[in-house]
Length: 113
Image (tube, rainbow, N blue to C red):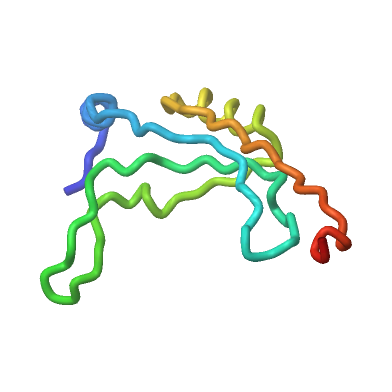
């Protein structure tokens, strides 16, 4: 069934406005602990919080849910760009600060003491 006309469009928009807006989290990707490189750690990521819990599929046993927002990850060059996008789209968001990099300075000679 197709909706035509302004009255029908308004009904559709009202239904969309009644739905709860998704909550997003904005964070900077941490360095992979298994590798020494820091590629793509300067980018900021916006991802949505899960709207429903995952449940096992009765046939295969795989975990899944009907929430398709779990599949969306948006990348941004800066934190300000990610926040601007969330505000422009009317998303409730939480900014998670980047973890502090801890340098463990040691000399090779310390292995033999």
